[in-house]
Length: 325
Image (cartoon, rainbow, N blue to C red):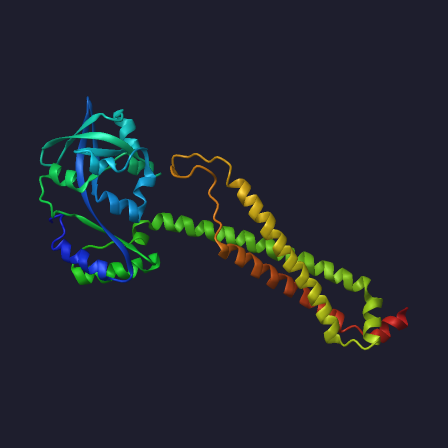
């Protein structure tokens, strides 16, 4: 099976016209052997359009040493995966000989290190410009083996992969399928986080319920007087619901303030790991939707926590309370 894509220019032109597509970046995947001194290493060189790769997929953020633009500014250059560079003891400026499957030897200058955060990937994968990769493979300028598509809505990827597979008659893989194992782990962690948060809010709701229940027992006389002076059961219920909702609203506001301050503090703590090379401090997500979810859940929880005691208070017979006194 031939690795290149037929009529790739027409395919890319069609993809650019698709309003669901944010951008398209061509790529060439080349199986090679790296050779430096006495060390030989199996690997893959990805030939990319440097500007598009950086614009669409933040390539420059993962180049931990060197300048990503050197790939197109320096002739016959390569940015090695950090794991591959460490195995070969390759330093900046070294000349690495690349051997293609056909036996051709091609020298490349090391102009940087790339670190994706996946150690197994960084041990084999490196990057070069499209032109350099085409030269080392001995291919023409229109040779492209892969087309990377970035969507405005990533959830459309599985359906579009099937659509493009049928439309163009080529192999198409969506990011969800390619990263199914990672997605499963991420979903499990999200479920656990939400489960813990919901449990804490429910426990807090029971606390409010108990407080209001105790308040009813302590304020029996007051409730009886209110009802004796003309307050209806609905009025008494509104009073206790207002108390419960006040606790929820002010508690949510206090949680917003202290939560944001605590998040800002954690965001300043250094966090250095090879798995996340672009992250320098503990990662914090400030997305407003999480604050909205917390606020809505706090109000809903306190409403139901106050509704049952409020209903109980509204049913109190003032005659029985006063006679008992």
